[in-house]
Image (tube, rainbow, N blue to C red; front, side, top):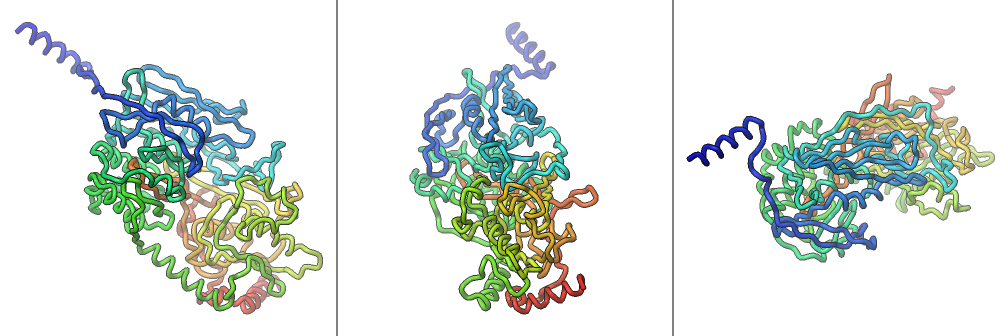
Length: 577
């Protein structure tokens, strides 16, 4: 009786101090090494993963092993970024170090608390800053320095470039039922959790585990043979539960249009639309079909899109389409039909009609990540016609050739669905002389503007010879001008230097984030980084599109360029008699 009273007294003392008297749950931990691939390319190294209690489809990674991987994520040309790790009881701290001792991002930390089940960033944007980023929210991902460290292709202009840093960001894993494991000297975090939180800033994609290897990919369909070589089957109970919780956390924090779509939480949304059952059940196929319909029917923002089924489901033949996407592509079909009437063999990238030059491309694209590559060829024809930057360089040569008749320059974005933000920045700088690209982070509150000049004539000098700003400038837009195809006319509209012709552009303010589920589904979402324009010192997102200065009521009016040229000249006569 005395022994029982003593036990009760001890328990009472622990309770009064807010301390649990029970030991943390212990697990049977096993480990195995798996080859690591970037898409289908063997990276020549293995990664060690850990598994709990015989569950082999839910991998964890040890914090020191993650450190060795993270050291390679954020480097840029001439910039060596690495991380150190320090352990203090249940707290693990990663600290960022930049080879530039004056860099703002030196000392930024990520703190993982294994008691609280939380991951804390004092400044998330700084900790995950890419080494080739010119400013905190820079969306230009090309390498813009040559081997001598000199700017090439695009040069950041300090005047007009600024950053406002964001708030502390804590991922409360315990609120989502996500457990961190500290046992036997190991500090284990679910691989998917680290992938979801750190990888969005790398442009590399997500981690995928198929039981045979680990793949880093933006779109798992790009390495389908490797990925789908693994056996199909159901998810373990542990994977189904964790995968659902992790999905809710990732979408709650990183889906950029959550507030716009009036989503209180994704757990609530999944329950409301009847997807919680399939997403928490054993069938990977049913869970994947729910994700597919989430991207099409319920988010349907045209940036959110499907890539590929989990390896457990296999490469299934399944499709769905939402109302917004259906409307977009119906209008695109009308425009393409009208285009084919006037250009049955395809519309040329560069065309002159009298005194007017037309530049047309349906995707902003740069086929190299290195700006210096555009200087290493004598003839720009060596670049494929699909490369927007090379096309603009060739167009510039023609527009400013000796005795050129060109007075008007028209950029045709009528069927441009977006693409590279680097190419978009180059295009804006070509038209306006400077490209001021603004952005906000809806997750951290950070905001800023990066201003660029372009070296269009490849002479190594960023000056007035690299712009068409002395011409009469026009841009053709439609509801199919989306994403970067929408950002560019929004910046044009705000500049007051470019006349917009057509119909209101299609929106699409958020950048794209390639994501995955813990069971291996591959898709993309509108992320929390939102393109904006700066007016009177305030940021306004571009999701509602840009209104035309002059409406073109029918699709045919975009592509009857003889008549359109006459119309443009009449506008120029009215504004510049």
